[in-house]
Amino acid sequence: MMNSISESFKSNPIHLNQIIPLDFKSVLTLPDSHTWTLSTDPLQPIPTDPFESVPIIDLTDPNAVLLIRHACEQWGLFQVTNHGIPIDLLKQLELQTKRLFSLPLDQKLRAVRSPEGITGYGLARISAFFPKLMWSEGFSIMGSPLEHASQLWPHHHKIFCNVMEVCQKDMKDLTERILGLMLVSLGLTREDVKWFKPKDRKKQPQALLHLNSYPICPDPSRAMGMAPHTDSSLLTLLHQSSTTGLQVLRDSVRWVPVHPIRGALVVNIGDLMHILSNGRFKSALHQVFVNQTHHRISAAYFYGPPGNVKISPSMKLIDHKHPPLYRSVTWKEYLDAKAKHFNKALDLIRNDVCIAN
Ligand SMILES: O=C(O)CCC(=O)C(=O)O
Ligand SMILES: [Fe+2]
Image (tube, rainbow, N blue to C red; front, top):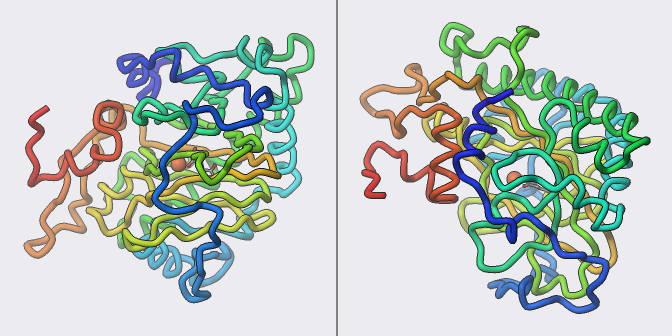
């Protein structure tokens, strides 16, 4: 089935060099292809001010809406607890993700993503924007992962498929619940956001589950797990294993670690939510570093609007003091802009900027 993500990926193919990962286990030193010049040493601990750490929000807190608004305005990223997704399911997700990435490279390559494709095994798509390669590998899923999972495991893919399908269902429900709270926190009602119909089971959600693996690295101080980026979604829900590495940029100046908390999930504001909120909610720039002792994994669920919907700054948030900052875009149009301009895409659809192209 075609949708915004697959259509955009199809019209922006990626070179195979930027899809096929290194055989990480086979190298003892960091190859030049993966050596980055980093402005800061990622191994130096970042001083953290306890008042300046990533918000953790209990979703059953009566003040959840206010807390969410504050976190979205100040951070663009926060963690949620008491979210209702069973910890056992998250453990299964982690186990199956580890099982996949610990396969030998030649076996993983049986399920490699095609240059125009969206699902399967390979490097993260943002690799195309950097001269050096990242120390990570990924596996993308949209709905049933059967096609690629049966290439990985001709006979033993059932459990993997089950876990990934249940996770997507639960993550869809939770993402929609959080999105609902965010819209309330902006003062918006169902009338203002007509396309948002969380109970509509007939509609396939426009979403992608992306599993990430960050293998143990021989020289983490010169390697990059995932280069700085914002997500192109409305919202992203992320499960990270107990290994640190994720950081978020605060106030455009300071990188702050997003410490793993057992059972908690990370919520990221994506660029489309940034547009919808007319810049009140910030899409968060984030990056991932790797380490020498622990294999890190994560699972990111990117959620977007239905294919035909144009996202624009909500009318309710616009007045003479707050003119609309962005032009309206569908998810496909935005993904196309991102595929061309990467981290500049959001600025390029600002109303005061003309695209020279
Ligand atoms: O691995 C992580 O913690 C973050 C991954 C991420 O940012 C992404 O997949 O977009
Ligand atoms: Fe991300």
